[in-house]
Length: 85
Image (cartoon, rainbow, N blue to C red; front, side, top):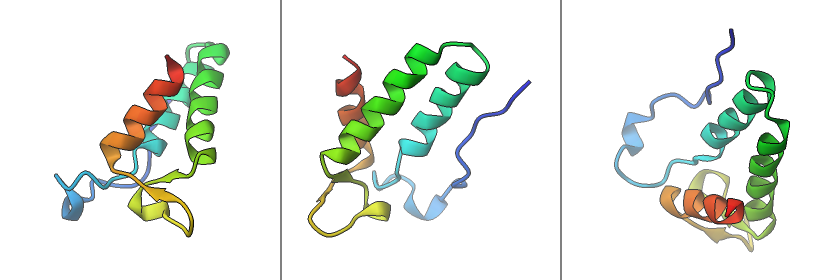
């Protein structure tokens, strides 16, 4: 048995603000697919989608840096999902 979870805590101070970074949660799913369900191809697709969005310069507030585009939690998740379609 395994447990795959992001370790960012519940962050009640940012609840409802649409600024949390969803990447760790998404990559936790990738790990579950790879290590518990033997679905490496699907895990690779998720990993590549996340990397592609980061390569395009999208960042949530917590990882924002110069010359990057700040996006919301929803926008980051939607951008990653779009790469999987």
